[in-house]
Each structure stands twice: as C-alpha cells, then as structure tokens.
Amino acid sequence: MLKFAVKRVVACFFVLIAVSFLSFIVLSLAPGDTAVTILTHTFIGFDDIIHDADVQTVSQLYNLDSPLILQYWAWLKGALLGNWGTSYVHNVPVWSLILSKIPYTLFLGLIAFFAAFIISVPMGLYAAAHRNGAFDHISRFVTIFFGSIPNFWLALVLIIVFCIKLNWLPVTGIGSPLNFILPGITLMVGMIPTTFRITRSSMSEVMGQDYIATAKSKGLTPPQIVSKHALVNVAPSVITMAGLEIGHILGGSVIVETIFVWPGIGKLLYDSIISKDYPMMQGCIVTISLGYIIAMFLVDVITASIDPRIRLGGSRN
Amino acid sequence: MNNKLDGFRHFCRRNSLFVIGSISVILILFTMTVGPSLCTHDPNAVKYSEKCISPCAEYPFGTDFSGRCVLCRVIYGAHISIGVALVVVVVGAFIGVTVGIVAGYAGGAVDSILMRLVEIMLSFPGTIFALAVLGTLGNGTINQIIALTVVRWAHYARLARGETLTVMNSDYIQAAQAIGNSRLRIIVSYIFPNIIGQIIVIATLSIGPVILAGAALSYLGLGAQIPSPEWGLMINGGKEYIRQAPWITLAPGMAAVLTVFAFNLLGEGIGDMIDPRLKEKAEAD
Image (cartoon, rainbow over all chains, first blue to last red; front, side, top):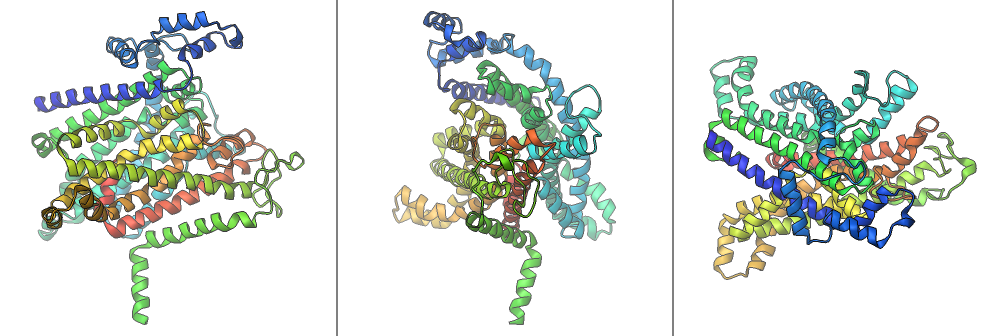
C-alpha cells in the first residue's frame, strides 16, 4: 500500500511539473512586450511617459530577456521554495493572494457539491435499480436538461427571479448565509448531471453482474440485494466520481464567481486574464491543477485501499 | 405493413431519447437554415427610437438596448454558436483520432510520449486551459475555436487509442499486414473505418457541452465580439438591462438551452443505441 502511494506521489509530481511548464509556455506566447504590460499597470493613465530605458530596467528586473526555458527554470526553483512571483497588478506575492482566496471557493464549492451529491446519488441508485422504469426515464430527462443550461444564464435567471422580481435574496456579498444560496444553486445544477449519470451507470453495471443474479436466486429481497451486495460494489466508482468533482471545485466556478462577485480563486483568475497579470494567471492555473491532482491522488489511494484489484494491478481499467 | 408500423413503434419506445433528440435537432437546424430568410428585421440594424420594446407582434422576443430585433439576432446567433461547436468537434476529433491511431498503432516510445501529453492535457480543467489560451491569443471567434479545440482533442485521442488497440488484435489487421499493406494503408482502410462509429458517438455527445463552453467564453467577453449576435455575448450585453428588459437575456439563453438539450438527447440516444458501455467510458472523463 505504501509503495503504491509513493509511486502515485512521484507520478503526480511529474504531472504537476508538466502542467506548470505547459501553462508557462502558453502564457509566454502572448503577444506584446511583458515589460510594457507591467509598466502600463504601474503608470495607469500615463502610458506616454514610459521610456525605453524603463522597459529595459523592468525586463532585467523580471528576467524577461533570458531564454524561455531559463525563465521557467527560475520560476520553478522559486515555486518549489514557496515563491510564486509577484502580481503585476496588485504588487503582492501571488501565493499569499491565492491562499487568501482558496477558502471562499472551496467553501462554496463543497456546499454545492454536497447538495448535488445528496440529491443525485440516491436518484441514480434508484433509477438504476429500476432501470427503464418511469422514474429512470424522468430522472434521465431532467438531468440531461440540467446539463443543457449555461451556468451564466442560470445565474442571471435566478437573479431576475429571486433578487429582482421577488426581492428575497441579495445578488452579491459574502456576509450572510443567504449569499450562498444563488451561487450554490447555480454550481449545484451544473454538478447534478455528472454525479447522477455516473452513479446510475455504475449501479446499472453492478446490477447486471452474476453475483446480483445469485443473490436474487437465493431469495433475497430487493432491499437486501441493494444494501448487502450492490452498494459495496458501487462505492469505488462513486468515490472516484466524488473525487473528480471535488477536484474540479477550484477551477469550476470562474463564471459563477464572476457573476456573483464572489471573492474566490475563479474571480481572481478571470481578473488576472482581463488585466494580463501573467504571474497571477500562472499561479491560479497551477493551484487549480494542483487541487485536481491532489483530489485524484486521494481517490486513487482510497479506492486502492477498498479494492485490492487496483492496488495489485496498478490500474483501474 | 402493420408489422412494420409495430416495429417502428417498438423502436421509438426503446430509443425515445434518440427519436426526440433527432427530431429536435432537425427542427433546430431547419430553423437555423430557413429562419434568416423569414426575418423581417436586420439583426444588426441599430434603431434607438425602438429600444427595449417588450415582446409584441412586431418583435416576438422584443428589442434590445439598441433597438435590434432579439428574435432575429437569436436566429442569426445560432449559426455562430452551433457553427463554432461543429468546427471544434470536427477538427478536434480529426486531430485526436490521428494522434490516437498513431499512438495505438506505433506503440512503444511514440505511444508513451503522445499519451503522457494527452494525460497532461486532461489534467488541466478544460475551461481554465481555454481561458489561458485565450488570454494568450487574444479574443475573437477564431481564437475561441482554437482554444476549445486545444482542450477537446485529447479526449478523442485517448478514446481513439483505446479503440485502435482493441482493433489491432483482430485477425483482419494481421491478415492485412501479412499481405504486405503499407502502414498508412492499414491505418486508413482497416483501422479508421472500424473505430469511426465509436468516435461519432463521442463526438455527438460532446457537441452540447462544446456549445456551452463556447457561449461561456463569449459571455466572458473572450470569444465573439460586439456586435456579433452570439448567444453568450447577447446574454452578457443584456445583463445590464435585466431590470427593464429581461427578455434580452432570457431569449438567447432559452435558445441555447433548447439547442444543447436537443444535441444532448441525440448524443445520449445514439449512445444508448450503439454501445452503452462506450458512453460510460466517455462519462468518466
């Protein structure tokens, strides 16, 4: 088990390095002189006083003239030691700003996820246990419909109904529990289709196995079959699904956070894109991927400890 | 005759999602094609004297903040939203299938390198990577297509590689190799035709999500630019007016929901019909 975990940690580390390299390269391909971008942020509204000498100074300061691979190496060395660079716009360390935003995104995302989980997992299990029944058809239809709603539009519709017409809820702010309702619902509706479909499809697969037929033929009642034989075998896929969804929380709410002015990492990333704040973008992207990779790692370890086939075989497929 | 009708009824009942989905997709494509010639208003004609008129006989979905007919703009917008998604899915599938077949067929180091690349691409959250690419390339419809394609191809590549590996074990590939076909010929005439069915299922299933992703990017102002009637952009423009004129926001959103719903039903239906297990593999992404 320990050997398996160590192997996964090493693999995750390399994926993270590769992800940070790829995003560094993509961001470096941006047109325009980065030094000029930095100076424009420093002298907002006074672009005309930027001299070539300043551009050169800034280039040297931020090491912008050296080859890309050396720039990346410098970033990586810093990043491993906890220095993620300085934001061009806010002029504070990228890492400290990201750390201050993570709790907001995580809290909102986890609330939405648990709501989605509580609704869709029982639905998925029931639908699969009564496959092709009326409930199965209706719940599939409804969840496919949920999956067809653009989240930014849903957010606006909720604002129109609950904030403008009914005047029940506030649009923005983070102070009261009421502020969680609309962004939470928007995120939840986006999560339900995936959680439902994966629960339903893995449960249907389990229900088609020989051991379920055996349980039936020895005279167990349907509730006994589900509780004693089916649920245990659905658990690994449901855990994997939950891990994937939780891993997506950090990156999944750019739009929702932007609309509801939620001070999380998604809003931070959006703002950094709009203001071309590259160190901030790089920091956000690496953090979001890190969240995903950590979630995947935990999923692998948990499912491996449940299911010996994965631990010994090394692969879920 | 009666037998055939019964058979058809049976087919419809067994594949209700496919039947409903394909009818709706045909209706939407029909509206998209015929609609513009029925529009009596120019979707981009600004007329401030008629701004923010609520839905009426003349303007069924009302007019927007520049006095433009919202219905006309929604119909014209369908061309952009659906067009972008189709281009992304087709180009993405082409690149992905090429990479996947090459990786699966070549094996060894080529396979390892290509698949590591695919894994890295898949460990980025899709929207975030598209945002990064757009942050670099700048805004616009073409860049939006590039960004979405860069995100999508890896999904198809992984699937195509898996399917190629399955097909490679078949006797007919060995027979084709034994009679001395070139590698290119084996790939083009033996592997490709045998995996294209699965690819089409996954491609159809991804049209809806790609329409949503494209609209989201345009909503953020990173895709289509003003005065394009792209749905995401229309919703973004309307949001300043949701108090006085909510229809500017509601109409394009409804159009997006209906379109994506139709494509999703079609995709799910085709998936149910052809190979339920395959669809489950795609859902795990």
